[in-house]
Amino acid sequence: MSELPRLMPTDPQMFRATVLATARVSPSFQRVTLGGPALDGFAWQGHDHWFRLFVPATPGAALVLPEVEGRSWWQAYLAIEEAQRPHCSNYTVADLRRSGTGTEIDVDVVLHTDGAGHLAGRVARWAVSAAPGTPVALLDQGPMFDPPADTRRVHLAADESGLPGVRGILRDLAPGTTGTAVIEVPTDDDVEPGLVHPAGVQVTWVSRGGRHDSPGAGALQAVQARTGPVDPLDYAFVVGESTLATGGRRHLRRSGLPAARICFSGFYKAHPHPQPVA
Image (cartoon, rainbow, N blue to C red):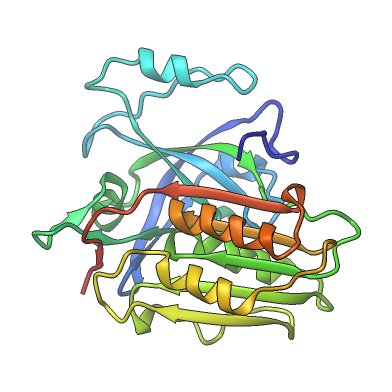
């Protein structure tokens, strides 16, 4: 997307936290639970509320963070000495719980392996090995999902990288909402049969069945087969691998949906052989 989301905070806050627990929740997802007093101030808006996650440069290292001024942080981040510069990736709040003992945030990390069968991605490797007490930080970015008040139906599509966001949107939609949702996952065991969603939203799961198919390709085919023509007052949210995001947007535009009513974002470009961890 070329414009900043309307709901993005103009003065985003950096929140320090620590790892409370980490657990495998399906073949392709590791759930990391974060906590700490600072998270009590995290103004969660639900839906696909996302943040920039900062983890230490190396296991056991101190967490050195950039100064944030307004929405500016990138240059300060690059100015940190490379050996100390934390890794930064974008993630969605999978769930947030508040209680008398404090605030906890769940982060669902996708697990892929490279062509040699090794766990790929710094955050994935961190997620499966982070010990309780490991420091992290979250830079609040707010939600992207922002349907106009006159929206008639919603159309959601994502691969596994966008599943936490789509899950949150479906959870927080008004009960009477209608529309479609297409969600692609690496294996059959990543499908969530208990997914909460309005009865009027038709949810389609697409599983790659553990094959090395390009992520997002199956979801895009399902979007093209199941979404269209659309009402010009519908609203769409298409995220994940870049081909899914751009191809889904192109299909929806051709089906009659104005560009201004399509929220799309290509989170990454697929490597040749991503595959789930067994």
